[in-house]
Amino acid sequence: MEERNSYSDITPEIVRLAEISRKAGVIDTELFTKYDVKRGLRDLNGKGVLAGLTNISDVRAVKTVNGESVPCDGRLFYRGYEVRDLVGGLRDGRFGFEEISYLLLFNKLPSRSELEEFEKLLIHYRSLPTSFVRDIIMKAPSKDMMNTLARSILTLYSYDDRADDVSLPNVLRQCLQLISLCPMLTIYGYQAYSHYHDGNSLYIHQPLTTGSMAENILHILRPDSSYTPLEARILDICMILHMEHGGGNNSSFTTHVVTSSLTDTYSVMAAAIGSLKGPRHGGANIKVIQMFEDMKAKVRDWTDREEVARYLKRLLNKEAFDHAGLIYGVGHAIYSKSDPRAVILKTFVEKLSEEKGLHEEFELYNLVEELAPRVISGERQMYKGVSVNVDFYSGFVYKMLGLPTELFTPIFAIARMVGWSAHRMEELANNGKIIRPAYKAIGPDHKYIPLEKR
Image 1 (cartoon, one colour):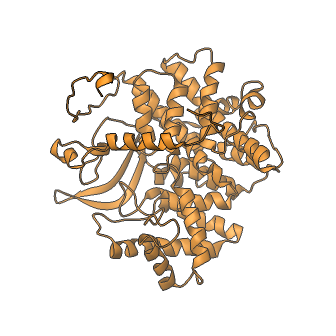
Image 2 (cartoon, rainbow, N blue to C red; image 1 turned 90 degrees about the horizontal axis):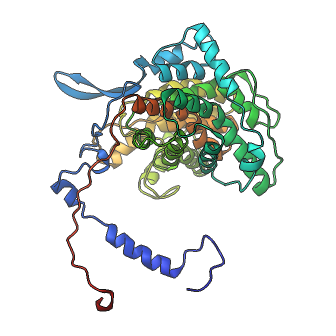
Image 3 (tube, rainbow, N blue to C red; image 1 turned 45 degrees about the horizontal axis):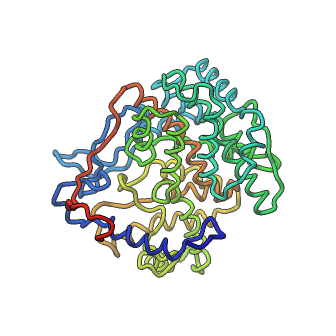
């Protein structure tokens, strides 16, 4: 085998072996029906197979009418409280990320004194180990900030004298530290990459010693550390809406699976990040932004309903944008009539678009939200309704906040660290068995053939 010059080369022999591997891995889809295997832990109708119990959060998209389940406007509950009410309770202008984190972690809304104590604890944990930025984050910066975040979290294991202790007090301490440190790990990683690969100025701001998570993120991200109250407030709302979404989503399920092996917190969170990184889970809002950029370039009149509808039809027919046949940000595995997170976020998006002078672009989003379900129902066979999901508006928010696209999914991860922490501690508290689903072997038996006779 000749010497290779590049670590990343895909050689002809690798291509040949990969095709052999692909053929070996293909399974006749009819066998899933024959053996009643719930592929992807989903029924034929798309409903998730019950694989566990949780009291952390609940996603509801149907109601019972005359003994039958019918679609309804989506509702999301954190510890039995509807998220719409939790966000509504913040009308006095205070930030809610810390308060609702407390609720998810401890199953109760904090009193004022409990909240103040909790906020001080999270601020205390904003400090990275000495020289961590220089020795870890600044070395070999990655173009993918989810990779950077996972690597940094795994490296923190080496700084923790009780890294493998899975007692609840220690795990809680680790989780609170990671919740507080994720913004610095991610944004410093982005600043390092932007500097070394794009030649931009390097900004490493020390974290705030007061203030909310949202304020701290904008402070360390922006060169001048400035932000408006509305910007910080909307980022706070975004993180609340992203911090948890039931136990059945891929990354939360990953958290339960890996935790059940009794491995350390750092390995669990890195695994959850690896799951969220996938474009089928956490990267959809980037696709929404890219789709709208293409739409704005191709549609001459953003207010022309027929022209916008024609573009959406071209998307579905694989004739526009990335030719994937998808209208990104529209549709959800559970919600059909509405995604409550999108409904809540939209009210704040309009305010921010006015502050940023982007109201015309907001109206285009609003028009696509109205037209897309109709276009889809006219072009595709529908088994349930479709509506826009939280990714439809969140990418637009992040764009208006000036966040680089490289940070869209990491912001999701920063928020979801709270939910993952709650699920990890729930799995440990119940002291269950290792999660090990069954797979049925379907291949034939073979007799061994000596090498010289093959």
